[in-house]
Length: 368
Length: 247
Image 1: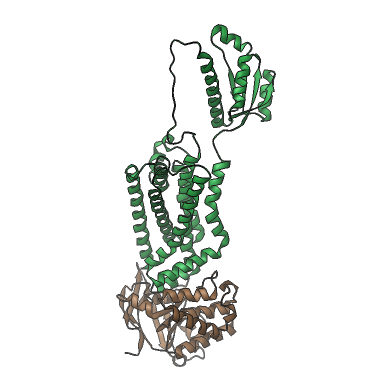
Image 2: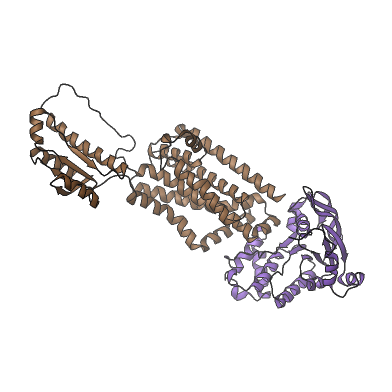
């Protein structure tokens, strides 16, 4: 035990001495949460739009003020002809143009129907889609109000309720994603590098000649990163609750337990890499391509897995981050308990054991 | 208590078809400075790894500090020190932290470490540098510190794998003085080297060629047997017989 403690102490010395890396390790989750929370968001707010009003009657004025009042749109330009529409788009000043045809109120009164044209800049299809949806909703809302007095014979209305995330906030999906990413980076990458560094330095040999058992060396290497990860988990959760208003709906204890399980899986993977490589560069390269890319691409955090072709969907099953991401969403956002995620928990545990056994076996083979 | 520190009999290591170490037999007495020579690829490192408990022999018998290399590797590890050709202290730790760490993994008590560290720093004239990073020390000092760390836990035997590589002649001389001092205290020294002048410093020398020990005697006797004036020539005479090429 004494050996073990002096080893862990030494690891902390290494980490504390390398201020830049320490700063990155502890600062990265905070930066990522803040960047994802405030800068990179797929919500559309205050988009600049232009209006071409060829009618200028009470109805179009009402619609106009509805659009302007919503927090999604900002009317920045009034157009006077069709030619100006394209010019405005070309200048890149607006994201969407709303065109009211001539005699809109008149048509509504006499034919019970009128048309509004929405022209959106679809060079970014997602934004264009979102904007036209919002605008359509606002226009339908207005229609509802004016038809309230006159009863239509048949109408079907859809009532929508967004469960678990009523405001459709992006934070609900990226907080779990960032957690997976950060833990993976700290644990897999750092353990792999720190063990391979000892090999490069030749200090690993000294340690193997010492009476310290190889198993203890490995565990002692992992302990500081496990602790760092717990700090990171805490800072991510605190930020998401107090800054981004993403609540922890389920059991905090379960969430932390699952995070530690995932952390251990990442550590085991880092260990496996370190037994297979002899240079820090190779270790870093394998950790990044083998763990970081799949975590971003195949965990469902950036791109929905449901839409992927079958081979990728199958492949995504071996990415630990996919299961962790799912678990965090279920526990943190939906507030479900272990009964909802026991299967995923078992899968992660299985992966952990598999990686551990494999890497310890590799470690021993190297010694013979 | 016998007077033998290392005993090997027919010690062999094969990797597939390749016989790295071919049935070597030798004995090292307690307190002896034993030079283990050989060209690159002759099998020195493999033999040394087996004696340190890092590698399991394919055949033969060997005991280190009275412990069997097959079954008692744990006890062996406790009784030996090791210094490799690669510089093996942590550059980003201070002198004191390095000493603490290596003493710590040998399970030494805090009191022991504290007392011995003070003594060691004084002996090496490193008191002023105790809290400086090892990175900032000159190579010669680092090497001496590494040796002191390797025998800090007071092992019976210390294995030195080309300990003076890349060090200037003056420092090498000082380094050998340290080795003599350690030997006087009863520590057995098992050292590999490429410098033939260093071989002259050893009590006895073995020379490995193609996995076998082709010569083993005192430097004086070896020179007599081969009818030459220096160890350099002894080594060259033997090394020319090698069929394997060095790497």
